[in-house]
Length: 243
Image (cartoon, rainbow, N blue to C red; front, side, top):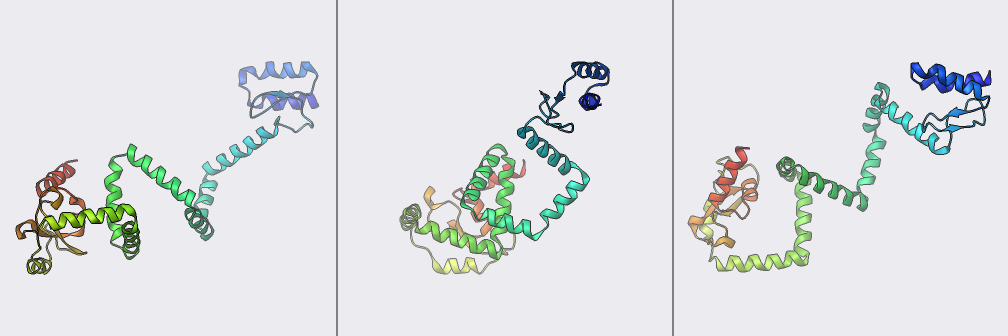
């Protein structure tokens, strides 16, 4: 009976055409031999119900069982409840505060953006919207203050001051008149967030502080334009809209 049970267990996962041959083979050997359900190796079981040959196979069987459960309807529902629980959110918050976890997240994001160029613009749009929130402004202000205290920030600040001095004096009355307006020069929309004064031709590209080179701009357009000239920025917008 034991041999018969062992043979029956062995042929359970065997194809239909080979079942009879495998049955005869294990019955004929007259020994307590089993096939491991994970690695498929022959082994001599310590008891009649042992189906796995080693501790490694037992651990693999547990992992397989968990994966199978996660793919089931019951497992998906349980995973959904877990993600919505307060304990999961606390664990995630604690993990994301770990410097190693933050470093890994930055690396993963850089690798993803390098392989998915279309995601770069979406990220910029998300960052822009986030920067308009109260929390986003606070974080951006802290990051700006930290950068200005760094050696790189101090050097860049000295360079910008020197460049601005060479561009000439600013007509403060003209700037005040621009700030009284409420329409962005570039997009033509009403400015909802911070008003900024922008150079049509950047100072670093030979622009001056003359009145005809200064315009009122929304923060979004000013940030997008960066160091581009007015013509370069319009050409960049056309290429972006044609994508």
